[in-house]
Image (cartoon, rainbow over all chains, first blue to last red; front, side, top):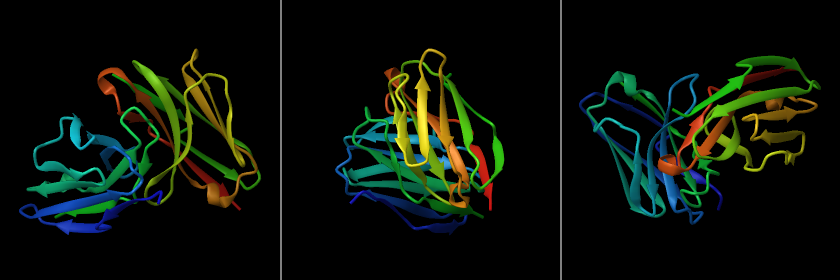
Length: 113
Length: 113
């Protein structure tokens, strides 16, 4: 299985809602990543998890809260988002943090009203 | 601050043409350079380059890295309409940025029949 899966594919939420994005991989990878991608822009790194521990937080606002329950799963909890947070959220994984070859999931298209 | 610059930003060609996409970088503690193809959703991995002067090939696509001049090129020969996509260059670093990929802004390639 060489796939990273993400759910949901699309999400519309209000500014007062709480929602979660989920990411799963079964490649035995030990590093997982969250990226944010705005239209016509490259992906921007948000968080890096290595062996289920947060290793990089790119100064992301606290309304985004990552969680890595086990080595196959990565969640992104969303609360009190702003309309400017609307974007494609991509999850990726790699064998380890030292292995830069990252494999991306299909993304969740998030719209904040 | 790490920087990755791609050129051209967009390119329109006809089927059968050969294209060359460029990527230059200024990165502290360089580890690797990666090329991705992004169509509607997730970036799909094409190549990872770590050594200078060694060409990587996959079908009609090839890429090479020059670590002295700090750039890479991606060549696509005999282009097809299915090659239409955004091509992203990303650089992986070490040190305090261990695990982080910095992306260029991408080259939009359009191949007309």
